[in-house]
Amino acid sequence: MSVKFPINVLSVFLGLWSLSAIANEPVLNSDEQDYLNQHTTFTLCVDPDWLPYEKLNAEGKHIGLVAQYMALIQSRLMIIFKPIMTKSWEETQKHYREGRCDIVSALNKTSEREQYLDFSQPYLKSPAVLVLNEKNQKDRQLSDLKNKTLGMVKGYVYDLKLREQYPEIKIIYLPNIDTALQKVASGEIDATLGPMLLFFTLVQELGLNNLTIMGNVEYQDELRLGIKKDNKILVDILDKAVLSISAEDNAAIKKNWAEMRKVQK
Image (cartoon, rainbow, N blue to C red):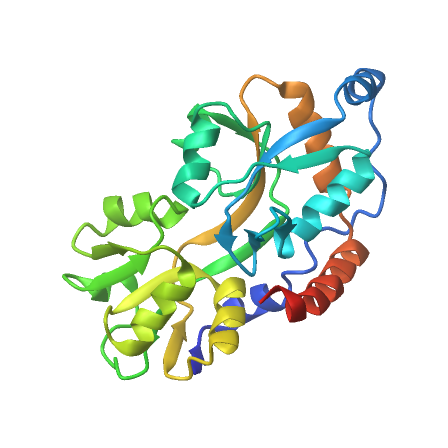
């Protein structure tokens, strides 16, 4: 695998874990505390097949990096998130559009999603990268992919952006990112697009050594909590929890996540 991206992108990657320097516990006002005293359990919609970010395992347990952040927020607010079992990201989207989730664990904010959800501040950021087969010496950015194929999961944040900004790219919908990477490696499709943090981990784990990761893509993942519309007090509470995540918290999450990866494959 070859990795090619500008120094400024590399610096963002190395700084992914320094998302906040705030080390304080969230301080809730009396109304917010009263609300949590009356509401202790919240339904949580997740992407069931998005490792290493998140997944629902066979027992319905929420695992992955995002799950580590959810565990921290639950502990900090003394609440419980109850994951809703879904079989695909499309099914999860249907759930939150129908108001069946109190909270969505991790998603980028878009105008379409704002019809159904309010959003916390971002708690995890990662620049997007383009992944190509190393035999492809011509394509270096999205504009080079005119009339070529790019694989992605239907409904991911880049889907709408690509269709609007690069209508000449032929989008191939696939069940998960693992499949997209494998099809780029085999030459079945030309490219895929997604978070650098995710791709670095998956490419290594899948042993796909014939891929090139290009860093000159204008998109970025900013993962936030999505909250069912018209619940401002819960938005304010979760914002305080997100903003309380310190550099030390991020270091601990990184360590725990790395250890848990050994048993989550």
